[in-house]
Amino acid sequence: MISRADIAAAAGRIERYVRRTPLLRVAGAEFGLPFQVCLKLELLQHSGSFKPRGAFNRLLSAELPTSGVIAASGGNHGAAVAYAARALGVPAEIFVPTLTPAAKVARIASYNARVVQTGDTYAEALLASRARQAETGALEVHAYDHADVLSGQGTVARELEHDAPELTHVLVAVGGGGLIGGMTAWYAGAAQVISIEPESCPTLHDALRAGRPVDAPVGGIAADSLGARQVGGQMFEIAQHFVTRALLVPDAAIVAAQRVLWEHCRVIAEPGGSTALAGLLSGAFVPPEGAHVGVLVCGGNTDPAKVAQ
Amino acid sequence: MISRADIAAAAGRIERYVRRTPLLRVAGAEFGLPFQVCLKLELLQHSGSFKPRGAFNRLLSAELPTSGVIAASGGNHGAAVAYAARALGVPAEIFVPTLTPAAKVARIASYNARVVQTGDTYAEALLASRARQAETGALEVHAYDHADVLSGQGTVARELEHDAPELTHVLVAVGGGGLIGGMTAWYAGAAQVISIEPESCPTLHDALRAGRPVDAPVGGIAADSLGARQVGGQMFEIAQHFVTRALLVPDAAIVAAQRVLWEHCRVIAEPGGSTALAGLLSGAFVPPEGAHVGVLVCGGNTDPAKVAQ
Image (cartoon, rainbow over all chains, first blue to last red):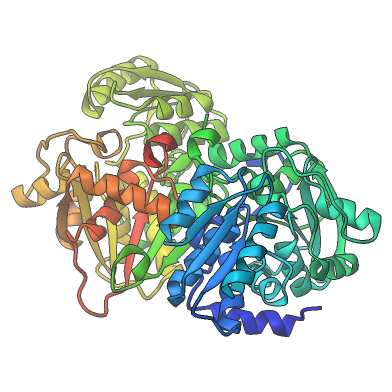
């Protein structure tokens, strides 16, 4: 299991390459809630999501072959790997499924990566990327199930704890679980980390119930960012220790949270990026009296016209 | 002329009602510049612009008649006055010109204000609002030419100086001049405040050249937020002392800055809100070696579909 020391080391390694993203403290009344909410605006990170943290930590910790790097992704991880590969001067090949929205494909291509769109879901794109990796010998950068990726994502929690030490509860959206795995490893119980997932992509919810990572449905509005078929084995071990609650929200609550973020905060979040807030606004999670609540707004790679209707 | 003490008093007065907006430090390479840029994301303020600072300070400093408050505005000030009036429980009437975009009219109405759309420009809406004020006796909340409004806007600089004390140059867009007037009064030369205006709305540029506020053209893409016909008399006195440079940018540079903010930062700024950054990206302002540059991103009330094309 990764440690706080691993995450601190990752933070030092990636510091030059990633942004320290800001907080926005929103009065509860704005959101119809009786308590302040602390938003970590991680969607302002390079490439529009938290993913460069893990991607840079993985690339900077490995020997990079001349064939470069290869990754499968719903889109955000691919964009981050492409961004990191360009920054470090190596080629990147990114495999994405057909459900990846055009905005994400364009973003990956804009960083000069080769994009291959194949398979219906992330899991199928991953299989295709592995067949290709066997040919090229490129470094595989897994989207979540790798210690260096987890440690990189954990640096979000390190910043958040520093900037908002009062937080008692932190809400995080989950797909493959890299973000919540890294963050939970950092907090290690010092704050409760709550998992929020769409009802249509309940990977961690189902895994915790089954006692092991199991196949979950992949569907709904956030499938491109949260539609890993299973959580990773490495994150699951951490989650079993420290994730106290894995809650689900309907797609309608995610759309409502996107609208609230735009209307009240002028923030454009993608569906996966507003899922954690949806957990709070929908009442799926009701914090105890006196809680200090933080919410990760983890991605903004979407067509803004769809958010601000 | 307003003082730092006036601004500090304003900050105490409005603290409960406004957001402390975050900074985003962007590596120069992202913007094709050889130095870091510190963005103050004031567009994340309530109602989508910096304007609630001045509006709250004005309302909280006055005796509020039962007829409430009245204001003329290109849109953002009106939204802020409506927001503040609702928060303080008084009615608001807002006069806006026909060039005010639908997004801003809708925003004002969403705060339960009565909106009157009349006249081609802000200056004409202001005349209409004054005729109406003479009937109702409501408190006029001028968009920029009032000491309480200037002191309120100056609180942005107080936050910025606290959070980024290293800044040597701060770029600010100018319409009627309330924001730059308040900010310059705070810095009082401690950092150089640079005025950036669209070529098609050069109010401060023309005033400084003439030695007094003079009528300037009102046109182009940012006219709804920066299209005051003249700068205010009170801000002009401050600007004469402290605004060292008043630079102009073409509309195309403003559009380019909007795109950069979306592509590289996932920030949706309105044209007026990206005008200050346009001054930097277009090369209109080239900071001296060793400078530390801050940029106010002051408004986000626009249709995001127009930004992310």
